[in-house]
Length: 263
Length: 317
Image (cartoon, rainbow over all chains, first blue to last red; front, top):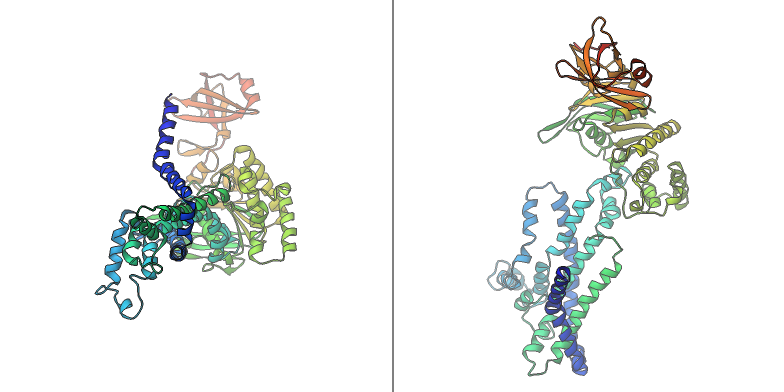
């Protein structure tokens, strides 16, 4: 009874917290498929999806490289301040995205320390660069956080072995280190991508939410909801696409990951 | 190829790992660096390989000063205690690694890897991953991988330390045969004096970052230069102002001359050899090595009082 009860509580919790809302959304989407489809294929929605895709791609690329380098420094580096870096890298998890967005506006906006950019024609705030910056900021820790424990676990012996066999530091990295941490990197990339696609708070502040220009997919959902006038089909439809993307990415990773591999 | 280490010192923070160490390894020899943990033997090996940098001193291989060279330019083969197998590669790719880095033609690599896998008796396991191998098989793969690039010297860091006793004995014998065939200059680090005695032509005994004595195994055992070597290489008991090895303690039922009265505390049989654990009047423990025949002849029993004489007694100034 005890174990059965525990299982029931765990499953019940999942249903109420996770499955319920998702299922409800799918249900509502299915109720008015035509309305949902029309909203998804509207030019402004397509534009929002494209922007989200672009921002996600940049954030993933930048933070994958940065995350791996950071993890290498944290685990292998002999430089002073790596403990500081290790603690600092979690900051985006602790900070509210709204504050991140606001600080970017202050920094790059009129009178900010980096207002040189907008003053010389490089629009940052209320343009794509600020959305990219905000997204990179909030997704910063994921790759590094996944890679650090794996790097610790594999140690340096394999790389040393590669070196005695003639591999340069660079060759040892590409042929030994990177393949050894690949699942951690993949997992970090998935989390980064999921977070980037879903980011709302920081982007809401810096983007200006200009329809067809600086409106990302999540902002589009919010708009569709705010200005629904009783017709929620567009909000459900776009939400469904975002949720489905996230689940698809997770599933792909599970399928790709070899049995017994640890991340 | 010969190895020459000249006045090498290495510190890790406060710890002095190597203290002005000089040692020569003759071309074609199999030398053991023998010492307890913390004696600096692995550090010395890693400095020869270029995996650590000495604070001062020089290393030459085959007469060429390699002190400033990175490991990949020293032409050494290195075998790690915990195998350092490339976990994401098959046995074949592990062994082929050094040749692939050197961009050798595929056919040549295939031929060489085939030969090596045969040499280390892993012919059928080329497509396996390291996780599918036993410890002994992994270490043989490690050896094949190190040998693939035709190293001028082969360096082994406690290569059999993580294996169980039987596999260890097997691999030891196999390494000796391999060395006799290939004649590659080999240095093996070990804390196991039996292993050093069995496998090496030359033993360098190390303690606290210094080399205590270098010589053929028998010489190091028979004529130790100091107390440390006496007690570390083989067993020895302090008796009076000197040391005696257990097999040099003769057991008799009657006292005669310079003997010592002891009680038999335990009799341990190792087949033909027998160890007697003895307790003298002051409560000091000794052990004597004798034979089964002698135990039977004297009808020795636990609790019996016997008399021991040192047939050979070594003192150090």
